Image (cartoon, rainbow over all chains, first blue to last red; front, top):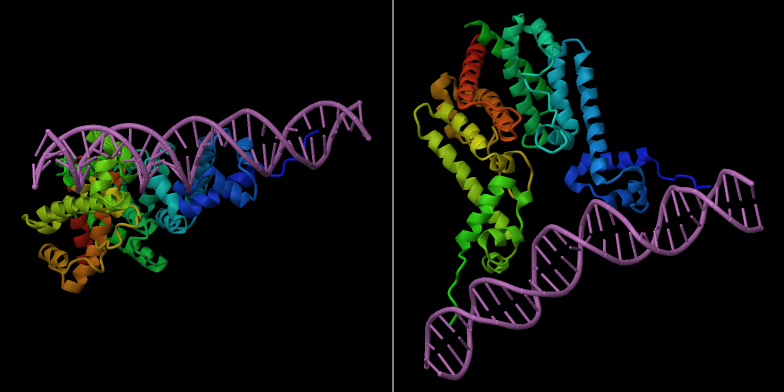
Length: 186
Length: 186
DNA sequence: AAAGTTAGGTAACGAACGTTATTTAAAAAG
DNA sequence: CTTTTTAAATAACGTTCGTTACCTAACTTT
């Protein structure tokens, strides 16, 4: 009986995601999605109760992309280092996404877990492999490494500084090395 | 002949500044200023061509506040360290202002000069006092210190982490010390 | 006191937005 | 082929903005 659905939920979500990738949530609105979809706004509200619900879905897709990056880093050789580099690479590849997750307080990212206190024990253990510190010492040490990593990522995401991949790897590797030496020479 | 001016330019500017301090530029609009002023929107447009012009004036006032903080740091004992702490203190005292100047690309802060390349030679020289490095070495070293400082400031400004003043001073002092030791042990 | 200048208030305009009532027409079921 | 269901388009509504035309009245000057 019904005419077949032309605009699927996923299409709407993908288009919204692409807009947010380029322009952030500020650039997202129903009419812009409709235009990109070559449709009216109706298909949007067919699949999503309101814009708020759509934004939540977009945020989840964004967060999944972030997790994809971190998981890739975590499963490589030198996992601790690679996770830091993945964090920064995410900021470089998807600056708007990085800003949304880590640089603004929206009503969406309440459970922002990348803090030292609630960081997974996993990361600490991976760091221990590199530093040889005890679990408790590594936890404290990790805060510094994470601050440094986050600092680079923020600079990259806002385009304040344009670091090449080599510069980033150099900076991070060198600094962590120096922090370890300095830490141990106490 | 004319009735006397009731709402002076500076009052309008100050109210706008206070709104932006609490809510960022997103929270600023003509009607809200008018309400806080207990007036209509008219006095605003008497003193400012349009909202854009007002926002520019607010940005300048914000930037002046930032410079006030940095100047205070620069003129104290241990200037290099104090400048870092001032940077972070600014982020803590005025998170919205910090975000505006250093965490978003608006059309206002084109001349964002706090980058390593164009950082004043002054800061480098002040750092040399602490590290004893050559000017060129200190320049490279400063990038790392600045990234670390910026990292803490960003975390504080977004309220991602709540560091106490003591924690901040400890983190910064310790990390810089360790970086110096590590750097010199090469 | 009369007159003219202009600060400020009122209220409206148009644009951009989320949302929705109404209409149109596609296609499955009889 | 007709009926029925409903996806999508059209177009409107209500808000919230920036901005502005118009009005009112305060105050200086004569």
